[in-house]
Image (cartoon, rainbow, N blue to C red; front, side, top):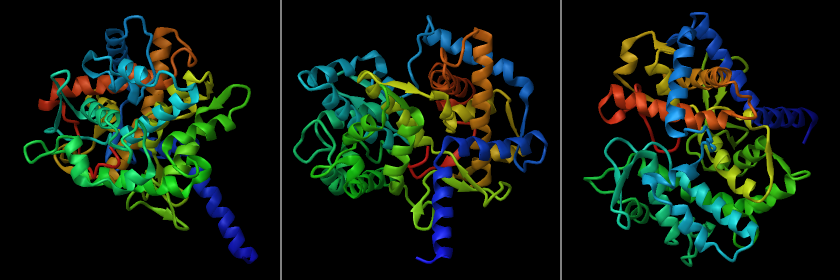
Length: 412
């Protein structure tokens, strides 16, 4: 490699490392936010005079759901208790007798496949849980369906309570559709995209033994990697995100690349500096938040929680639109369906990331709580995601988001 090509490689490596950092998410989203504040955005204006009203709405929802404000992290684990059913109690009983690290590895296995299957389900799909006689849609339905598939050993070749690469690579659309009760009368958005994610997950597990283990690679082996990264019983949340983005980056379909490296949830907007790339890493951060609890159960102290960002998806973004923090410049935006790579969706998501920081700061100020007492991940759970769903249900039949998205099942 000559000096010029070496310099290019170093520059590419640095850019990729930057685009995988929470700092880059905030910096690039801030550019689009500043344009909106200055009235220079093509699609949206921001009305910060609504900020206090939005914070009050979020606080009211948080008190309603958590009367003592003992709010858990915004993670997949909350959805596994849908319908007030203590499924995790049954799960923990099944894990009795295992070492703490073995338990954490199994919980990593479950969290990874469940989060990757968590993109928007659409308005018409439901999952019926036979043992409880309950029916769930959207995120709760996807959580319960994936939990039951995992509990029944459907992600392992030998039917055990774990995920293995070999099974994921041979998983069929029929198996996934059966597990999620998909039919012509019960359609699930993006079933092919979800299957592709799991199959590609199986491939990357094999290709990164330093993260996922030799011999029988699985997501759960990431526990050992992260334990080795901890210092004095502490682990930075950004270290977990970096492992997720590095280890799982190649699973995302049809994404932008730099030097053959898949960038994942990163998109192009012509008004953003330095190449116009805007990272979000929504599912990867959602997964990171969902891996923190098993790590805490191992006794690790998670540091730097608020270095991660709020999740730019349609509940948080919908809250900002429905309560007037974000205002479309053209009403047609609310009538049409938009692709995930469109400027409209990129701007909406970018504004959501920055406004979630504003909302969190205002909520803390009103509650007289610190960032340590009420980190962003708890404001999301308390919180903005639930508030976004609530206001959507009040304003539109079926609680659909204010902006319609053409989804392939791998972003939202």
